[in-house]
Length: 229
Image (cartoon, rainbow, N blue to C red; front, side, top):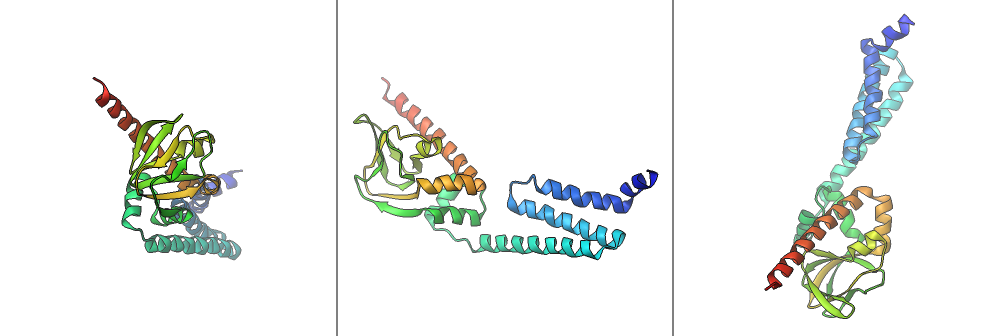
């Protein structure tokens, strides 16, 4: 028993513990880059333990392979971020609606949807129907109608259809482009897959939508206050 205790808390034993502790911690990381850094640190500690204390070539080989795979994956992520390029309108979108995402993930997000120029009268959502797209209004305006009554105007810099798509319900208003507009939009089906398969991007999208909703509420309150006698 004393032998096991001494071995567990010897220098070599502590290095072995460190390897597994770092591996466990890596599983708690949400950011894939940080996760891989912890796995690399774990593999280095494991190689040292297997090489200098256990004299275990099999362990050294597998820990080395784990190290190599994660170094390569980190390099690929770095290269993807390095190569990601954006238009000025995409840069504005990122700065206000996709904060915290790496350049590579932002590029993935934009590539899921498309930029379009829409003409006056284009319907973006219909009341009591599930929207086909999540739309971001980059330039132009759109009118909001409820029960055939005009109630508000959406200006550039806001999402349209976000509550229906993320809340799994029908649109509460009809939204129609009221002048030439520039938009980015993504199909509803892709939003569903994004939430399931790309949680980091989906969380950034939801955070941007929360910011957008706060700004809409502030603008609505300002409009109401201004209209009061």
